[in-house]
Figure 1 (cartoon, rainbow, N blue to C red):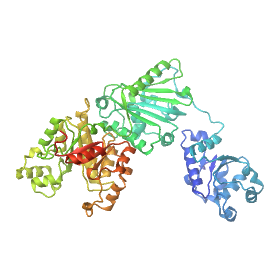
Figure 2: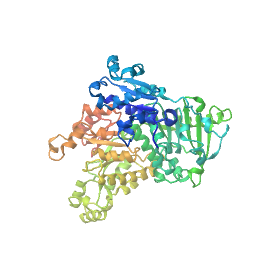
Figure 3: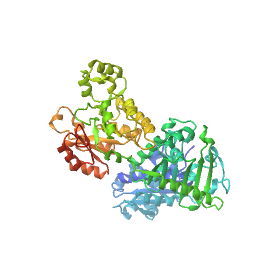
Figure 4: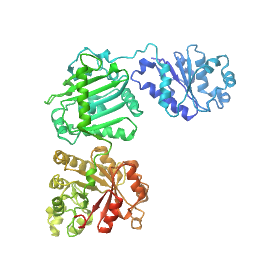
Length: 632
């Protein structure tokens, strides 16, 4: 079937004109009512024409009513000289032969209509071109320019729809969720028409943002998704979402009794954190989007989606109830409430006021960074070495810190069998005499420790046993070391996956009631941190850094890594929640200024005497200290 086009978007030459033509095409096509509102839209980059394009121009132009031209300063440069080979020239000539076509010119800075040139080019038809609708391009707000153009193009037959178009009853219509989301009776795009603000709570927020990633049932229209996100990015739509804190008892209850999506693609225990990661990544890429996220520990018996529209008569609430038995989300009780309906107004405000109270009084706003205030309350003990005669990373060291309630910083080492142990290569080398213990399995390492008789084998922990041993008594800062300095390292990915899953289990077991089970991770490798952030944005991450240009690192650290730390390029890979910096390189105005600029704390490491401690306390927010009594 041959396509009919009502709108033709042309362009020539200048990059700015081409970019605007592309943006305008996307703007028009991404409207939920694009077909009804604008009709067929032709833009050469997006259309496949089987025949020679120049030969098919008359066919393409046959039904066109609006011909749009982005006119940049150099639009007509060499136009007369090359017109016989110019596609744009042939487009305009063909368009001028159609008496029903209206020209719309988007004028960029520096363009002037040269009446003599245009008359010479287009002859008697040039007056239609010279007298066309002219719209000045707004360099400060391209979206405003596209709106003005779009307003000229709306078909006269297009009717703005109302929420009442899909309401089956003036009163509350209670049905299964399957029915209240039926694409024929309750189409999503109609519910969002002319929306200016959306407020979400509970599982509603999960399905809304993550959609098909979570379950096949939530697959949404591609144009709708692009339409919504583009307006969210440019600030036209505001979103507030109240999510269940993924590390709360409410989240655990939701996994057991509330969430049963049909065709689920991920484990239920990961649905909420998966959605929060989606929000985080969107905010990270679009910092100017009007989006606020709140986390609550309250367990509520329903999910809510409130939409506020430019036309207040369209304001409505969709409520999805929960049933505390295993089932299918499609068969949850669900209903709509209209603000502008006398019969539903009272219930509408009950649900809205209840949600606002949860948001304002019983939730915390999540501003891209998880809470790290606990890292600043007490000095952090490096390797749990609380005194000079304590052997680092041992059960005895951990016990001493737990008695004094000091947070600790410990290193992680992955063995050949994938088991992660707490400790460092040099420490295990001293105990066992094995040069590289990472080549040993956990069973072999224990055997070597036992043979050495330096310490008892039960003094060394795997990460799982270590977390169980400290059982939320003290906060812990984990350091992950990795020489695999690349973004897609399979080895790093497996290490991060294992560590993050163990931390999740730990926080849920020991960090729910009194928030004592605090855990953070720092590393000098920003790609490790990026993997952690992508997997779980609730776990605090810190960038370890120092001056690698010192002579001791001359033949040890490559130039790529040196530059990464010298110029703080790690901030482009991942914005950390804190920075851990070598005390030997402090004070450092650039690093201190960087932390203030991003509103993140600066930790100084590793302090081993009183003079270093005094310097560190003056130039950092907290210190990581080892083997000294000055902090006791």
